Length: 244
Image (cartoon, rainbow, N blue to C red; front, side):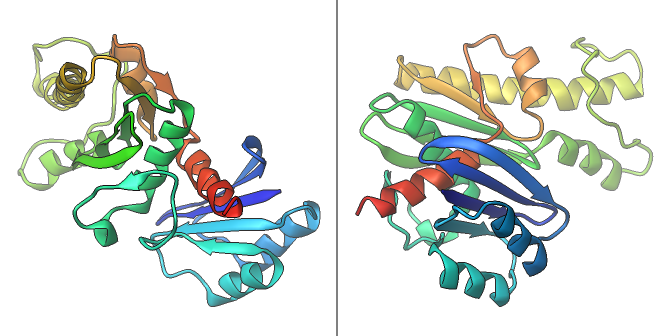
């Protein structure tokens, strides 16, 4: 059994896989402790392979425990992966971007795929039909855009996503902000989709991230939504290394 661990700034996400099949997920906020991790192992004694992807300085006790009890991988730019990383600076590439790309490519082998991660930032990433990860784009996410309007002006309020707002023309200040932020983000993502479809007519599109539901409702393209994409990608890395 594989245990994949994604350690973010605000939450630790864990998932158990039997081979390539996702069996169970857990989350801990804001961190996972060694005691909590040991409890996961006690409740699931079949865990024998693990991977950690971390954007924080996590406890050495956790790393030591995983290394002592499993075939353990700490995901970094030197980890062997099942795609060709063509990114110009692989050591600066976000692990979540690469893991999501690997997860999406595992779903659509030999077909170009565009990954849209709509979270704190809006990230697009492309993998070619040959399995080449090329890179993509990063821009502020929807909530970051709302907060920036408030932070960098004197009078504009902080708003949140309103799924019931669809107009192009705001009739008051709040509506104008909703139009600018929500429509702006949508037009941006649609523009990337259209641009990549011109390059890759057979392109598949996979959407993930905390704001995926908003884009899923608004985008007309055939898009597959996969909230567990990063976890699936991490498991693909485990399986790839186990086969070597």
